[in-house]
Amino acid sequence: MSDSEPIIDFRPVLAGRTSRCATSGTQGQNSSHPGTTVRENSAATAFDRRELSEILRLYGRFVASGEWRDYAIDMGRETAVFSIFRRSSECPIYRIEKTPKLARRQGMYAVVAASGLILKRGSDLRRVLAVLDRSLKLVTG
Image (cartoon, rainbow, N blue to C red; front, side, top):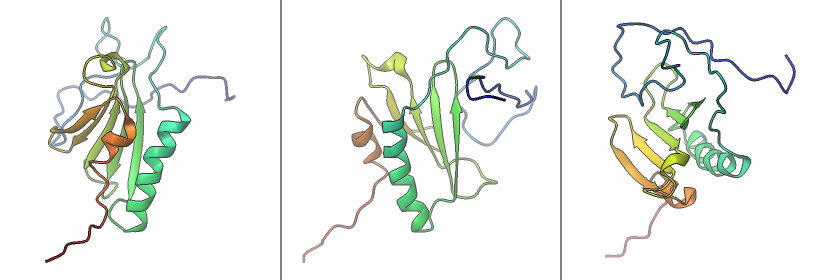
């Protein structure tokens, strides 16, 4: 495989199987053939280098503190998702989603909790990621 060949999604589609995790829909599935995941003539949405460096800066700090252990990146036709896991065998505790279609309305970035609750949405990734960044604050009393 060369660098110019596209990555094809090889995950099997499990019909009728439900999951305890909140999902973001049927990304990457061809609507004319519901059982296939091959993308035909569509460009996948992806994070660029600047966005990934912001996400991985935050992710690295939480890995160093021992709170997060694994991540996954999913690039669909309309949405790119960076999922954060506490353990690799669990559901993602947070999903950082990029949906360019919502750029003019609500903002293209969103942080979604495991329950599906949108914690923050906006057009500036750094401000959206601030909802996860819990830095120490001085408390005077």
